Length: 360
Image (cartoon, rainbow, N blue to C red; front, side):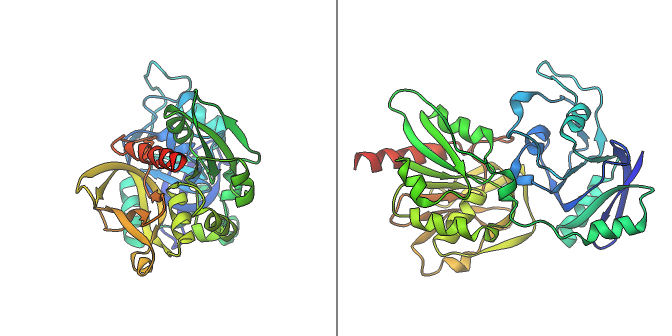
């Protein structure tokens, strides 16, 4: 069936609507530059309610498999691709991408000029869009466009109840605040012999400390970090209590808790090919990223916070560290799902901080 994406400024991109006339959706339109990893992207809670454009021209060529899911379900608002592969080939494949889209009820527009769409977003910035069939009435389109983009989407993706995953003998006890945590992050911590207790995003500091953690992890997640002021207040109470490590949204919340400010990027960083420089070593890592907000550098003046990493694409902050406390955060994803594992060592630094605090 013929369909179209209509952006907030009226720009229209036409294609084929997978799923029929009921496969309509609305949300912020963003793009990801990764060449692989479409299943991890579709199951990353950080994309909650967003319409994701994949810039790689052929999508779905190796199918999907349950082992690559990063969360309990897909929270993405919609998918836009150039060519949707219906006959993939892979030894690990369990379902085709079209079958996955159907099972997860993900609206998809394909046969789209994604290069033109990406150039539009890069020049004009991210904006709201709607995916509809070619025959949708203008009144329906206007009603969809008038709907506000939902705020505080963290509550949609966070676990409703706490749960624990054991590790081996002499394991470190990590409490992870779930703002939309990815499975590979939990796996990375468990591989380093951490017993991980995942708690809801709104958990009070007192309840977290009552679990007697050796360290506290602040996860990735969707949306504007300023949409969760209650979470920021609870993290402030934890700053001088235990070693803390934050990734992506967790890094932004941690920075706000330390007194910094954040701002919205024009079109964000989304892909698994983002260069980041370590200011201490001078080394450059290729990283996986997915965020639309960043820490404002000028807001760090006078704070006991130092910048540890920067983006080589636009110079924005990619990592911070407290100058006297074992507290640090990075904007990118060292667990690499999808993406390179250049920065997986950052989890070791968190482990070192926990062991030092435990022994000291």
